[in-house]
Amino acid sequence: MAAPAVKHEGTHDCRDAWARTLEELAAQDPRIVAVVNDSVGSSKLGGFQKKYPDRLVNVGIAEQNMVGVGAGLANGGRIPFVSAASCFLTGRALEQLKADIAYAKFNVKLIGQSSGVAYGELGPTHHSIEDFAWLRPLGSITVVVPADSWETVEAVKWAAVHDGPVYIRLSRMPVPDIAVPDRVFRPGKAELVREGSDVTIIACGTMVHLAVAAAAELEAGDISARVLNMATISPLDESAVLAAARETGAIVTVEEASIHGGLGGAVAEHTAGNLPVPVERMGFPGFVPTGSVEWLFEHFGLTAAGIARTARKAIGRKRG
Amino acid sequence: MLKNDIVDTIRQKALWMRRRAFTMVFDAQLGHPGGDFSAIDIIATLYFGVMHYDPRKPDMPERDRFIMSKGHATGALYTALCAAGYYPEDWLATYMQPNSKLNGHPNRNYLPGVETNTGPLGHGMPVGVGIAIAGQLTNSDYRTFVLTGDGELQEGSNWEAAMTAGHRKLCNFTLIVDRNRLQQGMGTEETNGLDPLDDKFRAFGWDVKTVDGHDVQALLDVLSTPPSGRSKPLCVIANTVKGKGVSFMENKASWHHGVPNADQFETAMKELV
Image (cartoon, rainbow over all chains, first blue to last red; front, side, top):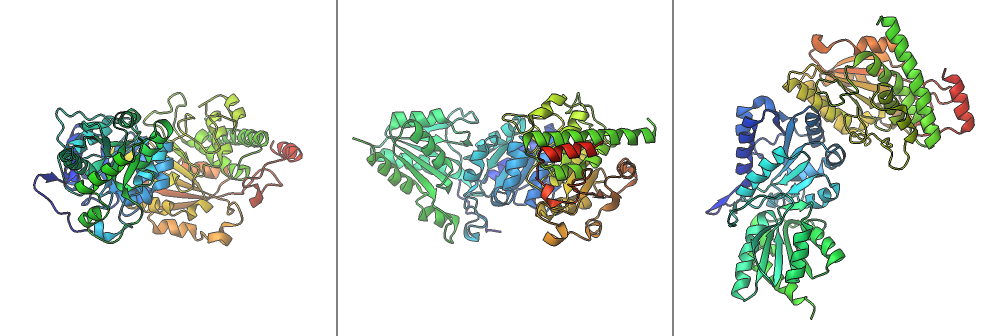
């Protein structure tokens, strides 16, 4: 497994928030169970296991079985949280996600751990940058990508009471809290993190705080950038995307994922069909070279400076 | 009901299911009649001699569950659920028609009594194992039955689930293998051999029984034995004949998804009495 990601002052690993919240929910609702593929440690479920040993179903290294067992537990009236490294949960068990979860519409919560390129040097076999493109067409699975610990807590709580399949995509990269006054978690809705009129940066997950930093950098150059935290990738908040296109005329999408078929793809699909404006998609073009998470972010421009640079490019593509 | 009466009832239901399923396939000119006919005696035994359920309450928590993992054999499943009272017979006439609830593979959101969506092979066992684990967690008495094809056991997901069932000693779980020895193109043993299938399951921590999958009395004996005396999951290897009941279909791989013409349909109906 990868070395722990570098932890900076004031940042938090969202997996801690996930694990703490699941334990709290499990204390209130005996129907909640966890299902893992030998991923107790990487899912931070050691505490859950101690408190509720019978309610932790470890099927071993067998992801197809893990997801099917999750569907069966839901059939039996349980509320399963199936937690595993997102690369294996989505890649290895994709047909189970399609047939057993999405098509059958079982009330299963899927928690993709250490997503994106969190496993850095371990390479593309262990990266999960394709998951958005795989899950978006499956429709009935709500895809949520929390940006920080607060949003992780809210997303997990919501998933526990929502009647339907949910995929929550977590990182292991410590991230700072996003500063938004009086925050309310609204699944399926974009969160306005910062108002702006020249361009809209639409980000999710680990990229949101970088988008905020980029907007601050742009402001210093007299560019007003709106920042949307698109925590729900599917279904997409289409009205927020259209408002961004109409009111700011240019969009940059930023995600720790492939630029094909994910957040950027969803935004581009929707604007192209309704209100075409320049859309710049930031993320990874394909399998990435060897390197640490920090190096990969830098290499692909997933930094405040890189996002600001791309925002200027998008503004430059506006007509007239 | 006396045991002989139960056996007679099951046989009558199975005969009706064969005739009705073949009519559906003839009308739709689509379906998988060979696999329907190898499985029908097993399914009829479960629904009319073994399982506890109430078609008026398809979500009743304590119901026994049946999963048709070989989801293509919808002729067998849909006629069984209809005969069990989950929906009226006129629904069967819509088989595979546009917007029908009777899709080519079962969808639990369309039809009451369907426990999970199947079609791609190797999905029923893991879901069934999850249901059985839920039963253990809630101290429920319900039983979970999964029917797989034999060729289907070439899918690795089955063996992942078989390990879990053995490891967790899921005595409330029963797998029935429709061992007709044919997959869609040719024999299982010519394709990717399964034998010795009984030893494989024993090695995974299961009890194994082998029966004639068309002998209703034998099926009833092995399937209706309550799991209380067991400490392992049960695998019933049901030796069957693909296309059972119609002379020109029996043991012919071409009837996996072959459909009858008018003459063949008429001949079959004369034999199915």
